[in-house]
Length: 143
Image (cartoon, rainbow, N blue to C red):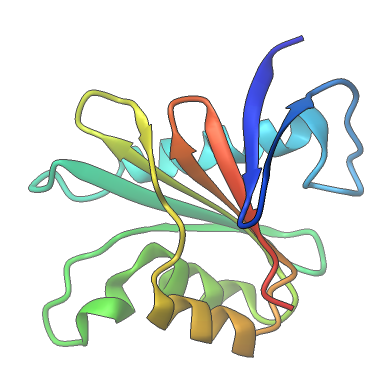
């Protein structure tokens, strides 16, 4: 099976992706699937940047919602962030997967900004899984 590097805010460990649980979207191959889905959503984003950002959320009822960064025309710039856009659809207690891809297709750091983190905490998000670099992801647990 493939390996991905896994990092939390405090330490780094390697997690081998063997087995998965459809009831727990943050384990094994299921988590890798949702990160790849967030990458696909990111690719639909704006063309005028050297990176794109996408976010997939799994609501408490199991429904999957997604969003990518948008153009901030008549709203504050942070309202156009993918995390902010998806949390409006996801509601309280969701799990988020955030991916940033560079123009060459590599993963890059996608940890939510401080403004988005405040909103995610207020919405009691269980866990945020975000890309760090090629083949690497991190986990942030706001609650």
